[in-house]
Length: 81
Image (cartoon, rainbow, N blue to C red):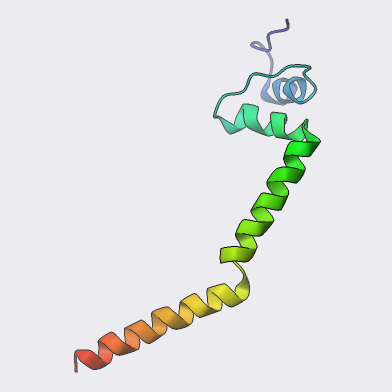
């Protein structure tokens, strides 16, 4: 077992990327090296993120949301007059 307690951030990060076994925490400092060293997890997460993007964050969805907001503002403005 090798502890990486007394080294700089870059050295610690690289040791984590190439570790045979890495116990992670919720911090991104240990999560990112784990992700970098696991190709299948990277691909799985990439597919999931692309799906999420396509379902809610494309330019056409954004435009529709803006139009809905502006239409709502016009309705409220007309009702108050």
